[in-house]
Length: 344
Image 1 (cartoon, rainbow, N blue to C red):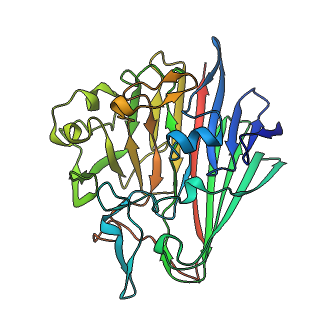
Image 2 (image 1 turned 135 degrees about the horizontal axis):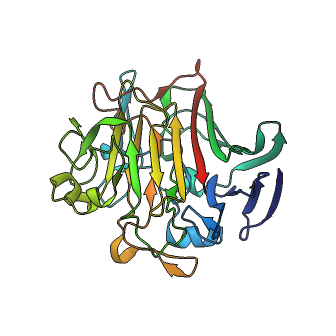
């Protein structure tokens, strides 16, 4: 196993984590993000995640792709919430007047401090960032940390920790997109998806949670057994039509087996198995339409990627039963998500 690094733009650094099997996980301090995940196959190395070639290109095209998201993943309706009877108004984005992914210029556009290291468990980079009290309107000085690890079991591990000096909200995730063909011009229609989720959250016209949690039974959201992604893309079910695919939180079953989610390549040569300590996963299917970015010299296909964004349910600050994302000074936030790659 080894770690190397190189420039990734004017200020950014790219860290290359390589295991003994030839897998390479490439991550940058700009947004504490995953950039490339190179998987050796019989037909050569395949990059199974979406990404760009420099920090500047992310700034120009899409800063969410592959990034650590925070303080709060997903949408906060109108940017309003209460903690201990104190009302807060955080910064919103103009499109729908909600707060998306912690508000503008948040974790995804920060240069995080980086510490690469190696031990018996694998090769790692720990990224740290202190989000100051009042950043985008959120209370508390928040010390955030995320560690990327690549193991010799071909696992990409994400470990989150955080502390705050004032009660605040914290619900981070990683905005990785998978395309297991290694070709961004190919849609994910014939990928197979399995999710150990018996319910999903219904979203409104602005894709905020409505408060309704619906059974997946007899809907195109039923991926409890492996199904082609066309099930979601070609359905005339109102929730799929609304977003042209998926942009929804899936609630893991109480007796969910592990892995909780699996994506399989069209030729079944690569599979990604996801396990997490979180109670749900948001799956977004990259329906960018004509706005799809050019990536590595080629335009991203419609439905050219699949996210597995593990988190507490979006809407937790509004709806009973959606979970708790309040972090208090007496607590240490901890969360783990693992993506294990199995390749021929």
